Length: 206
Image 1 (spheres, rainbow, N blue to C red):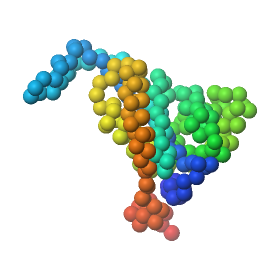
Image 2: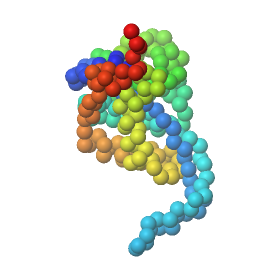
Image 3: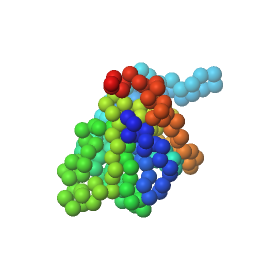
Image 4: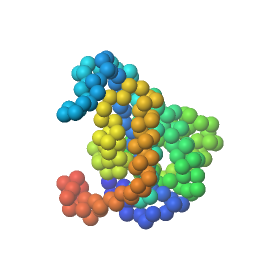
């Protein structure tokens, strides 16, 4: 926990950006009956019946101090999907960075082994050398700022029925453009000092 909190206290440095990533799933749901359009005095009426069209995975990346976000919608959440997401992050979105300080949870696909299972050894090593990974502790996913961003995405963009990947990608793209246009930075205020006082029960008794 203190490791992640210390990373959040670092000053903004484009050469060593602090980036948080998380992932989630969203069920694709279609309508059985077309909704009745809104009319004066009432909103749109949606039938309670629906049809499932599978599940989509959302990979979310946020650089808190720069106010930058990126979201990808995929069909799966395999090691290869994560590896390709990380490669694009390093080579496209942070190509100028020397090393990315990556904060994430320790999901079984979130490790360097995924790079080696996806790319040739030399390429996997090249990518791994540009990562400085900081894992949130078990039951401490609230420390990941990307989880907060996922919550905003879910409530502001994904709280209604979306029938397919194409629709979801368009909706997410529009939300992302609006979010990044604001370029609102995220200032994390919970410090190591706060943790030692408010979460003292988590520390060993000496």
